[in-house]
Image (tube, rainbow, N blue to C red; front, side, top):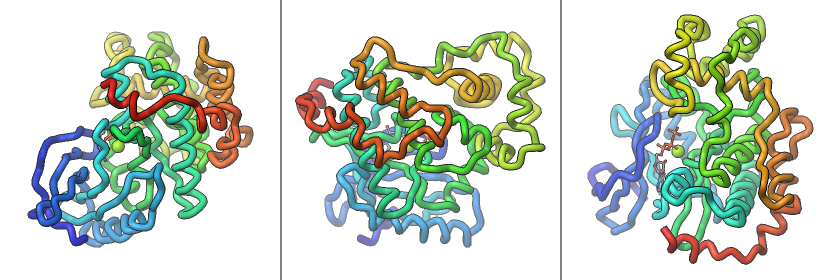
Amino acid sequence: LDLRNEDLREIRELGQGNGGSVKLVEHTPTGKIMAKKIVLIDAKPAVRKQILRELQIMHDCHSNYIISFWGAFLSDPNICICMEAMDKGSLDGIYKKTGPINIDVVGKVALAVLEGLTYLYDVHRIIHRDIKPSNILFNSAGEIKICDFGVSGELINSIADTFVGTSTYMSPERIQGAQYTVKSDVWSLGISLIELALGRFPFSESLSDDSDLSDLEGTLSPARPGSINSLAALGIPPRKPKETSKKDKRKSKGVSLQGGGMTMSILELLQHIVNEPAPRLSGFPAMAEAFVDSCLLKDPDMRKTPKDLLNDDWIVYSRTSPIDLQAWAATF
Ligand code: ATP
Ligand code: MG
């Protein structure tokens, strides 16, 4: 399929992210409905072409747990990525509408994400790098699929250069500058599952006014190679936090962590993730709680891989659990 902007008729907007927007479009020559993601890339033509080449790997990704890829093209100054449209949107949007998500549904989400991650890694050696509820999509057929995985190193670099926003699903080892591994995705999955089950971001009540940034300064100090990379990826200038007044800090507490002027609370959150015990589920079936605990082991050496977690008791249970996702989809 040779995709061109002229052949794509916009139907409506599906959502907005940090990097750009996603539109529901019709490919007029074929009548095919797709989601078109428009990413603004501030990069040289050679780099943009490289990104486009790297994205082609997605043509070879075929799994029931991965969003299908229809093609990508340059449309100055943007890159457009056309993919399967999921009519129920992402899980963040769903829980914001419905409230906390039934734990058996959350179990199906865990299973689907682990299947998707295992496929990406085993078949293509791809690490997702951005597991979060907005990148887990759902449709009225009851399918759960992941999108926005890190296929293009150049795209990751280009976005990192301009990125400002949350990176709050990031594992403790990543915050401290360690290499990305499949286990970092497992941490992000654990945080995402708690968010879905509680109907709110698990750290949103853990930021306190008297959090002390001094430990964080150590974590991010230039003396530790690699730390600077993760800071840069967050778009956070290392010395800014000191200037933030107590008043500003209080204002940003518990609210959206996105946008300018709120880096203070992001830094607090990163410090919290590194230094405090991981969040846990409580009041849910023991199997679900144990699974989330195993995703959120702070030491990546102790944490299992997505493939190993497919044998976890809760995941084995979720595979055959009687919840009907198609019926559930019809409730909102
Ligand atoms: P961030 O920019 O921080 O990664 P995000 O994932 O929300 O956040 P985008 O990837 O740009 O940002 O997506 C914006 C929104 O568009 C998503 O939250 C999702 O609800 C919707 N969306 C993305 N892809 C699709 C798709 N294939 N089908 C249906 N809706 C989609
Ligand atoms: Mg996304």
